[in-house]
Length: 218
Image 1: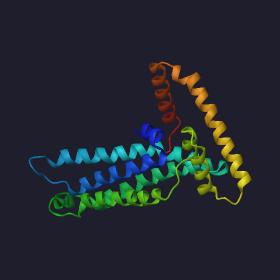
Image 2 (image 1 turned 60 degrees about the vertical axis):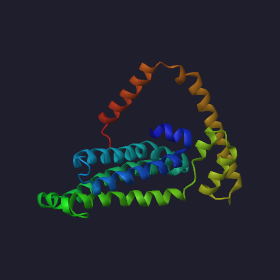
Image 3 (image 1 turned 45 degrees about the vertical axis):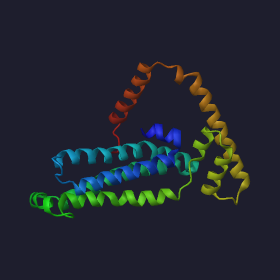
Image 4 (image 1 turned 90 degrees about the horizontal axis):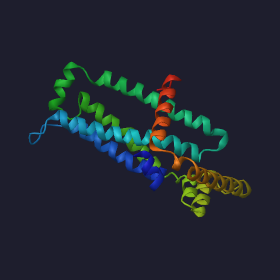
């Protein structure tokens, strides 16, 4: 879903779609109560699924966006920072859960809107809100604009990211992006799109397995 949204509507647009989904999920988690015969567990499963969709889109789109907007000299560090952020997020979530949820508060949360696991849910929506606000001020990826054949969009995005004080370097990067995208599109048409679906699936599975064997940061 993240790849489809990012490729069709843009990296920034995909993120702007995902954050409200996650926010609704965390809010639904926090206010879940048995209403109309719908059990709380079913509501929690739906809410957690929405949070998972948000996280899945972000995991697919954020590193792509970072790689496409960052200067070459900073690209590796920024993409790595995303992975570190995921690990730090896991740790923070466990700490919040350990501090907020115990046997007493689980029972007490049934009659309290801001206790125990409900409080943990409300806290989960905070970073999403911050990310949503920040993303509203970010430019779209110049490389995605290049994929769409929008040279003006490429130039506008690069100007927002790099500034207009070095027009020669700006034009050089613009030309490099257009050339790279044109080369990649030609390569995909010639090879990947002609590859059978089982082969694509096998490549994806092997990549996933080798990433885990290599000891992913998460």
